[in-house]
Image (tube, rainbow, N blue to C red; front, top):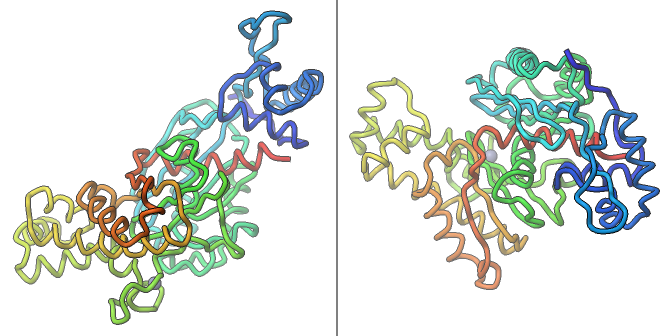
Length: 396
Ligand SMILES: [Zn+2]
């Protein structure tokens, strides 16, 4: 069993070296000195200190650029981060190296409504499995995403509408105690947004929105390359923007919220109604088979050419597009990424969202605005959660 050393950057130069190595891979000391605008002597001293702390290591001579040969620096091969991404109906966990490449991962169906003790026990059992698989006792840190509002500074969930029993539960401290390492907690949408920024279609994007359409709907906001959480951590909670005054009742208690029209639970509800009323033969057949319909079943009915299922997706996409058009006018993003389980509904949903968003926004804002589906799947949450804890370890 290898043991990762505990530690974190001691100053801003060390932090910048670690982030460069995470995002760019091994660099020579000369390259680091150029990028950080500091002397090679300073780089050499800080790299030596990072090596003592088990965070970086020398990795042989760099290719010569003429003149004095420089030495390559890499992140320590011993660094291991854990990423835990908890959704409403399932959770993913994984272990990454210091550059956030996923080394081992697991997914398990799990209902968030079982409460924090039961759900975290499932997550921690999977974490121990993946740690064992890669031969690590104690990770350097862990990141967690949960599907509801989070007080980022206190590391607790706050009044989550779809998570009974989680209000005020000290998720961060409980997991930190179990794993014996520092932990950060954030909402799942923020976690997915930074995962996308690190390894997905938003790689390198500075100003973008990540819209998660799962059981709930939320939006991660990245401004100037940094996640924007708002004063209380609930920025981007777009699922509760009202789209129609006399709409269905939402899990939050209000009526007509976007989530109550277009979230995964709303789609399942409407699909069941369509099946029972006889309007959709394909959904009726699926309901007979499984006794309960999910949003994914709407996708299956669409692939069978069921007109009512297509209409459900169109209505859902239209409401999402209307809200996004408002966000585009307000925020002027360079990219919108759509992710979450409902993206299994794929291009029918995306086409409707795009159509409405482009039609309802000013041409200047959408002239060069890609709206694309995430391609990361379950790994996005793991990478994002690992990235959040790396931000903490790789900062002074
Ligand atoms: Zn609501």
